[in-house]
Image (tube, rainbow, N blue to C red; front, side, top):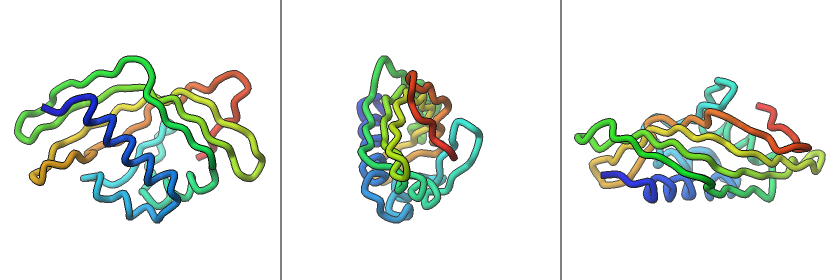
Length: 137
C-alpha cells in the first residue's frame, strides 16, 4: 500500500519542478487531474501555478509534524494523505518574505506503471507566521 514516505517524496519531486521555473506542463506526469486547488478555492492549472511561483525565490518546503494516510481503495491503490508543510518564499517584486504552514490534503493513486500521481492536490490551509507577507492568488 502507498506509504506516507512515498507521498512525501512525490511532493518533493513536484516542489523541485515548481522551484525550477519551467513550464507547468513539465509537472503533468505527476497528476491524473493536473492542477492545484488553493486554500481560497481557486483552481490553478499547472502553468498558472508555475507563473505564481516564478514571482517568488528562495522557496523552502519542509514537512513538519505528523501526517496521515487513509486507504481509500485497494484496486487501484488510492489514499488520502494529510500533512503540513513549512513553506517560505521571498516575493521578488518587494523582497518581503512569506513564512507559513500549509495544510495539504491530497488524494494519490498508484497507476498501472507503478508511479504515484495526484488525483487531487489541495493545499487546504495557510497559517502565516507573525509578520509574514501573504501570498496573493
